[in-house]
Length: 284
Image (cartoon, one colour):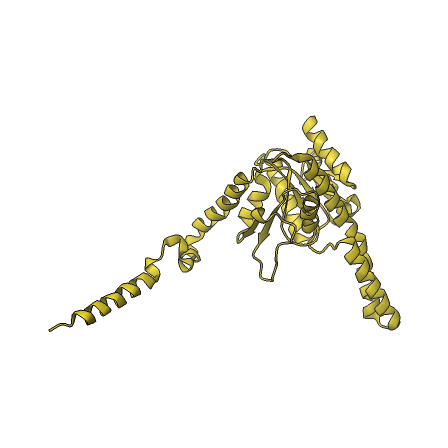
């Protein structure tokens, strides 16, 4: 004869086992499922929609993208590093490695000027374009350190919102602390991240940078050139740097781009100059 208590206990164990089974999880809560290769299309859609919903809720109508090197330090940090390098080199005059470190630190001091320009520009645009909750020309960066931090920091200085589009990388990267928390996003896919850079962009401001900066700059220029995106001001800050790194004039002379493609971008050196170029573009 069956024991009712044992049968009830067995039934409860079976029910608990079913509730804990991966197959019973809600699909969107099943991380193992969501990370399968077959689910890539769904992950792409989620990465597209999540920031879209958040920006709509925050009243973000348009943005200005600020690109540049993650390795550009604030001026005070650069100056401190140079002082430390000089002190170490002075203590060991014959050490070539320490002398090389002084040279690198001096270069960082030069580059730190761009950090301050990016921060000042962001202060200008954020203070003039976010009024009474209406959010136009919101600064958006890659969310990391360097020039990206400067862009977010300038908005933070004046109590304005700014966006950070961070990305999962093999090495550890945290968002800089000046991004508006409700607008701090993390991406798995570069392609979707790039889409969010250009979807609301009314201007792109590119500071000196490396591979990532060049990638984002030339993708934007290509989209404008091929009429995949509407024309917007593309402003390269620091003509001396850009002329040394990329000879776009030579590309036109070689016939690989049209001479009119040289009109897709302009140069600037100062925060107000950047802002004036953007204003002039839309007023004309």
